[in-house]
Every structure is written in structure tokens, then in C-alpha cells.
Length: 212
Ligand code: Z5A
Image (cartoon, rainbow, N blue to C red):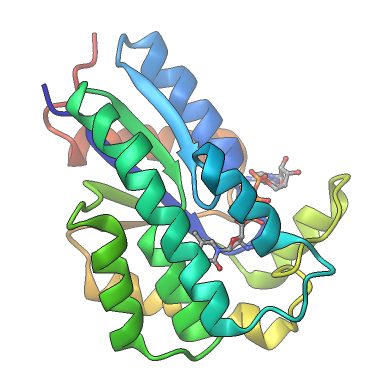
């Protein structure tokens, strides 16, 4: 048995969490074995790292330290959560993966892309996503959505707007580089329309999907 890794990516407030939940309910209803996880924070060790990485008052963190902490979170996640669940035949819905590091630390912070790719290779031990769903949304719309909901801004959300635009540009570049892997969804649409498009994408791009 071999499962599949489906990754959801995009800027803040793009609707990943909402759609992961709906996709999980749909797949479970169709008899597909599903688990939902995220980066950072998909393991007990990762939850400690997530706190360090996202605490709003932790603003002395150096960009290279940040990069290494995301890589450490990913290495633990791959070994403890992703690989065993894939081996057990699960369909994994993962909120963020290597593409976030390329978009945020690479395009957003301007860290060396070669270094990022090396660290991603070490952290994933070669594990790749089977499908990446990218929620394409205006940065301002995403941030406004988050501000409308009752929430406390984290360290990355507090970055200047230019940073978020560079991240969005990073995703645009990634989607044009890997069209066979990354599917763009217009995330400015309503929740139900987006969900039915995700279901179509899963059916089309994952031919072995064991839907009943
Ligand atoms: N990060 C990084 O820098 N490098 C890395 O390698 C990794 C991560 C792995 C944590 O991510 C942070 O880590 C992230 C990047 C960085 N930056 N920040 N901050 P996260 O995924 O945990 O946090 P997030 O990106 O801010 O996502 P989120 O808060 O979970 O938002 P979301 O999942 O995209 O959206 P949502 O919660 O589904 O929806 C937000 C609101 O909009 C909510 O009120 C919804 O009801 C509403 N919503 C959702 N869909 C719609 C539609 N279609 N229309 C209208 N309203 C909607």
C-alpha cells in the first residue's frame, strides 16, 4: 500500500485550512483513508518549533536560524508522520511543505535559493508531494480575511506588505516552473466553488484515488 501526499500552499488567509477540512470530509465520506497535518507543527517536536517560529514577540530571530528551524521541523515531520502514513496507504492533506520555504525564506527573505534547495533535500530525504494545490489570492484580500476573523497576528503576518508580495510572486514563479505538480486555484472565489474545483483536481490528477 502506498498513499499520496497532497500539499496546500498559499499566502496568509488564502483559505487553506478551510479547504483542507472540507477536502478531508469529502474524502472520508468517499471511503478514502485520510490524515490532516501541517508544517510547522505536525509532530510533538514540531509544535515546540512552531511556537518559537511564530511567536509575535520573537523578532530577534535571524533569517538563517528561521530557515534551519523550518528544515528541522520538516525533517521530523517527514520521518515521524509523513513516511509512516504513506506506507500505511493514507492520503495525507498537508498544510504547507517545501514550497513555503522557497516562497517565504527564498523569495520573501531573499536567502540563497541553492542553500534552501539543499536543506529541503536533506529535510525531506527525497520525499516529494504527489500534488500541490496553490491558492492564488490577492495578498490584501488574504490579510483582510485573517484580520476579520478573531485572531492574534503572528510574527510572519506582521511583516511589511512588500514581503507578502514577494512571497506571492514566489508562488507564481513556482507554479510556472512545475505545472505538472502545482495546480493553481483562484482563491478569491466562494468556499463551495473552490471546494468543488479541488475535488475535480484530485479526481483528475490522482488516478488511483480509491473513491467509492
Ligand atoms: N512558513 C514559512 O515561512 N516557511 C515554511 O517553510 C513554512 C511555513 C512551512 C504558518 O503558516 C506560517 O509559517 C506562515 C508561513 C510560515 N506564515 N504566517 N503567518 P500557517 O499556514 O499556519 O498560517 P497562515 O498561512 O497564516 O494560514 P492560516 O491562518 O491557517 O490561514 P489559511 O489557512 O490560509 O486560511 P483559513 O484559516 O482557511 O481562512 C482565513 C479566514 O478566511 C477565515 O476566517 C475563513 O473563514 C475565511 N475564508 C476562507 N475561505 C474563504 C473564502 N473563499 N471566501 C471568504 N472567506 C474565506
